[in-house]
Length: 183
Image (spheres, rainbow, N blue to C red):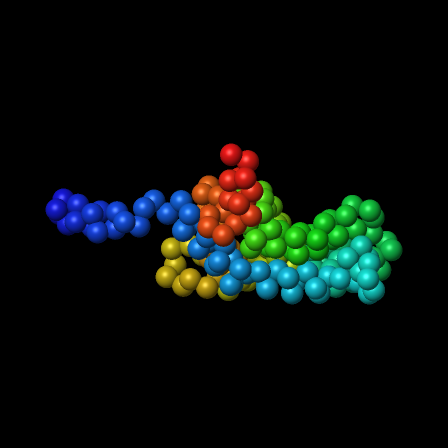
């Protein structure tokens, strides 16, 4: 058994430790599978006109604060500055954080921000939209069914982003380019 493990280690030693390839692959996976998801979600929250990002749509409030909107009879003027700030901040985050991750600029901080965003998104789905009771949405770990939206899929999202947090941005990133110019 030890010989097989040693052979494996020798064969794969040329790959190195993945300090550049792994975070680049994580950024690529994020760009290929999640960036458009967040970008399109951000588009649904924009209000009318050129300053629509600062005047979120009715749907934006309904997505993020479903219970508060229902209590306010879907009249956003009955909500406070806190609600506006959260919706506007979330909308901006859906555009800015994925872009930063893709280009590899402040990729670690942007990944931390995205994980926070995913946690808030998941809690909103579970509490605000009542997904606690929907086993297909909630999912379960160790159940042989890998398609639960909250526990299964979002765990992989967080794993991908965690790779960037712990390993950096990797190849073809502005973080790497700018860091080299400092030395």
